Length: 240
Ligand code: NDP
Image 1 (tube, rainbow, N blue to C red):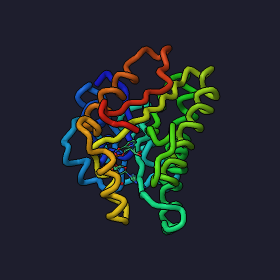
Image 2: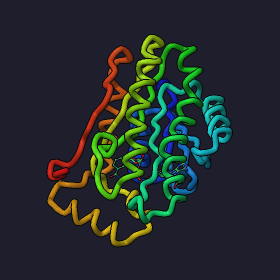
Image 3: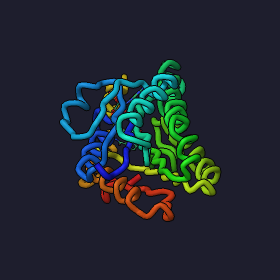
Image 4: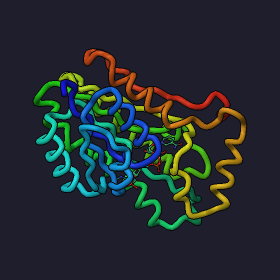
């Protein structure tokens, strides 16, 4: 086992699951974190520890990172991918849904960064890959609060990159367009789910999660002295 540990949050489905399998195939030991442990264990990846973690629970995250590093050595990268999207309008959406998106997409990501950053700075090496979105570059209706959380991910990542540049720690933001995953299914309004897919019904509008995983691996595999700061990627047919 010569390659270093990679930590992936939100590894139980969609993009995170594809990233886990891709980094596993590249020979990395893995620490996979999400609430649905059985789904991650079912991948059957070698040199992999799967732990039940809610990224909104800071203490749980820090304990999980310690357990993973005790087993496999220091993490060379964390891929902060856990996220949720609940489409809605500001007038109608239950505020509890905003709270949940802000807690998971913003505070959860901050928790994940903090769990590895001091040690990466001390080692003067590491890579933080944050899952942003095309929704973090421009606003779509009815993605209002979700867009806000992803703009926050992009803004925070830019500031963090500057903060740790002199420590030889890379910060990379991946901003996908539409990808075929469970993400939209958590929206509570079926009408909004239908409208979402209606807007994406042109051919080649929705990417496969594997395509995002390949890009994440590519960005990570550049030399430590090369920081691909951001990649925006969408299906060729996606108009917006
Ligand atoms: P999925 O819904 O398939 O995956 C979301 C992942 O996040 C799951 O593994 C889920 O695991 C995990 N997760 C959610 N809440 C928590 C939590 N509180 N604690 C720990 N893990 C959590 O969607 P995607 O794969 O599409 O989403 C992955 C990332 O990609 C998200 O950040 C999303 O915003 C982003 N993205 C997705 C796009 C798309 O079109 N699909 C486009 C642009 C960005 P579990 O439920 O087991 O905890």
